[in-house]
Length: 82
Image 1 (tube, one colour):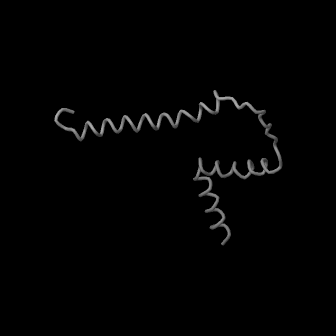
Image 2 (cartoon, rainbow, N blue to C red):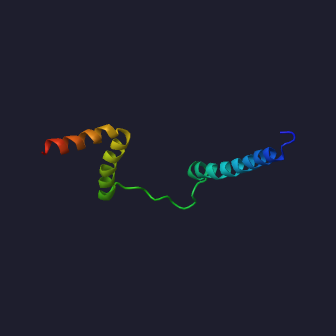
Image 3 (cartoon, rainbow, N blue to C red):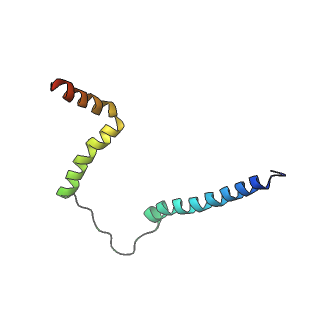
């Protein structure tokens, strides 16, 4: 780092931005787990909308993890429909 003020500036700015990012990212678990809400918390109920949403989300996540299954399904529909 001696003789290169640009590298020192880059290092110091990287440390500063890392500290700022750490502060903002650590706030999320702090407010989720350690900071308690003084008002009474609302209970979550499983309504019809939440069940339908879960049933629609499951295939989306499944095909995201295994896209080959979706590709095979599309190929079967295209080639066997002719």
